[in-house]
Length: 171
Image: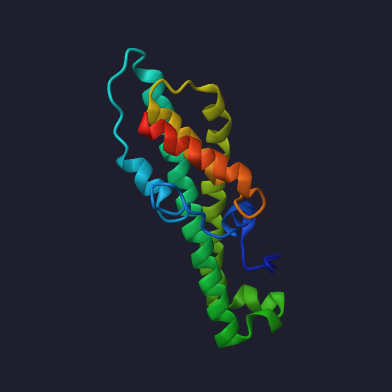
């Protein structure tokens, strides 16, 4: 079986995870802290009840998937770099790579990345439609938006989203 994987960043997650970790206003970074921060957010009771909790849960799930995709992409890059140093991975034929034990590890990472991408991509359209009825719900939606806007490509837009998140949390 031949593999087409040539790059350091695998699959669709590589598009998102290839960017630098983006600082968030709560002192964490997009790669290492947003999902953890989202898990710690508590939702106060509100008159609307479930919609905000559902929004928060879905945002938290999306942020967890995003964090996992970033970790998997970093793991892929470390493994591929090690394979290059130890085995001249890029000089090996696709047939030789396919037989190498390291390819099985890359394949496992790739399979999980595809699952995570699929889950994350399925959640995203629902986030825009669900109402956030608490400031924490709005802040979580803004955390997702900050993840989606690359700070390197759109620094002003990213700053605007991050600032809005900070302001909502201060209300």
